[in-house]
Length: 538
Image 1 (cartoon, rainbow, N blue to C red):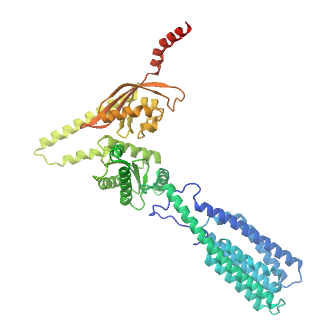
Image 2 (image 1 turned 45 degrees about the horizontal axis):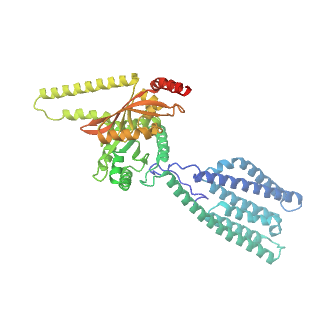
Image 3 (image 1 turned 120 degrees about the horizontal axis):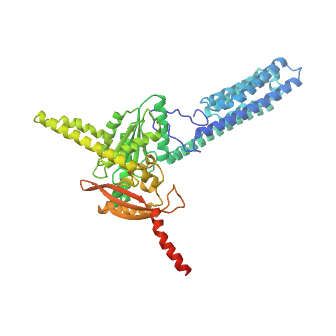
């Protein structure tokens, strides 16, 4: 150990070197506080002892070398006073232990010089020699304590042997020497025990940090630690002008897999996916489990093309008959909106485009346009056939663009709430009207589950959604009543229609049509309420 706390410089290739620590587990902050207190107390004690020595020298003007000793002591006091305000800076450095070690040795040498020039073993400041040993035992490592102890013993022996006339008895000097030896032994023992205790505390702190930041099932970073690391990597990418990409991985139909094979099989699938992602990732990539069946991987120094290659490799490795398929979306850091929220939002949208277009893929929907260039490489019998195929492709693209533009225009102007959720009940598309009914904006609700958006209404909605998925049949004109976060305390009523959305006879999600009928209900209930009131009066 180089100091009372082990200090470690983070390395770029070490995925755990910059892992965020929860509040209260930051050992470096503890170390700074300890060293600041230690330096303050040590400086004050040495100032006090130096002042006592200075008073002694002034009160005994006829002693030897008084001018020099008074000058030396005054300089030491001034040096210690000037050092006190800088103790906070010294406590934050990596060489604070060496600084304290140097000061302790210097203090011993100055004390020995003063004692030798005063009256040797007859000097009353002889007992100040114990201070360097005590100071070393409180904070320095074992070998530094040993050096300070040997130096103090050597200084005492030099004072003793170089003194021409010894007035103290041999027994007194021997007892003081044994006192110093005993102090050195105790200091080494205390230092050894302290270092072992701190090693145990550091190991415990490391384990607590790991438990607080790591998902126990998969070994990946948990939600909070992952997003803290994402912020760190984004800041590093901006400082170093590097690209950065983010993969969002979701297990397809995981709820159905859990219901069919049991939670034990589901846990095994999650563990397998997490370990595979960690194994395939580079040493400086960041892998996290950010939800129940959702994972994410930060790819530092990786462009969108690099992310595409990595995503394809992970998709192939995660394809196994023993577990569900996975959908992977990805995005790169936008140079115009360089923050974590935008990056996560882009990757989320990419993921849900993939899921809504068939799942089990490793590229965003936008990249599927590359398939057009691949079809052009297929050999045709004549140029006429190739031109016909290209014309059909262009016509299909125009029709799709027109349909999407009409849908977007209708969604933006409709007085009816419209939306689409996948089989995991995550919102893939939603218009502003339905988002307003939920109590938020469109961008805040995309990618979230219906339960997360409207938790108070979910107990009424879940059976209807599940019925559509299980039976491939619509649920028409179902009234749902309750409160939303945007209008607490007010009960509203919505007429809800749910429709299965299928691709090749497989239900991929639920289409939503919602109309707020609260005011209509109040109008309809008006005559009935008046009639009931009249009857009660009669």
